[in-house]
Image (tube, rainbow, N blue to C red; front, side):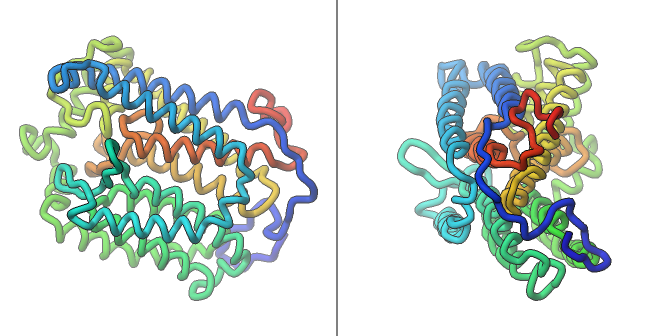
Length: 398
């Protein structure tokens, strides 16, 4: 094991190990099964949450469901393709992908190109569909960081020549996303960046200093924006203005409260009847709480926890550092976004525009998440001899 200075994380694998011959085995069936269960739960809940609204607005109760199914089919196709491609291929594309994403994020900000909705300019219109480049930016950032951390190796313990260049690149991406504005995506990018750098061996003192420096920046962003300041005040006292600023989060509380332990029954929820805004997108977990109760909500959360556990297992068994960092990054990305979304709908964090991966309505988020799973499946095909041969018997060979 490479020598580590004090204050760094010693990893249980060699930083310089390389693949000694290919060992391509079956993809991890367990991870695939968990992903499919979450996606199917998403289809059911999207239809339950949107049928009445879609029927009244578009005269088609299945309006949102049909689109979600189309995005799911497209995402599954891309997931399959990504699972068949050697994951080291993405290392070569890390810089070109990053450049393309930066260009797309700039295009979003151009009034004649970007599509504005609900006070934010986050979408690009491509024919009859709209895509959200910020979702792509998260995966591109993970791929870039995995390639960068592999290249730097033990130098990540240094600040100027190790940690700082990566922070500048992620800072550029975050700055463009903030201009949309989309603070939720920036929060997820920050969590993933810190997590990947920590697991790669960056000094804890550097990361803590970075966190302290970020506090005044976050405060300036929040206090300098009227709508963010209002969201903070609503977070601190949601019931003070329950009919206006606090309406969404208090309706979310009522959803969970009315669901009780077992829920009111699938399709029987009342909050989706124009009470809970964004019931089929960002706040779909609140509808799960109302219709399926505490048990249903806990089941969804446990599925995400199991996904994260399995993702880290896959990453730990990868043969080369790039595979390990890439696997950890994708797992952190999906896990941290699910965690932030759950914290928002339960009132533990101020409201942000973040979807629940695989479950919420939204094409860009769903497709990008499924591509990430495809890359994880590719990593699972190429692992140490001590790794599992399939998702079914993974624990026996761990």
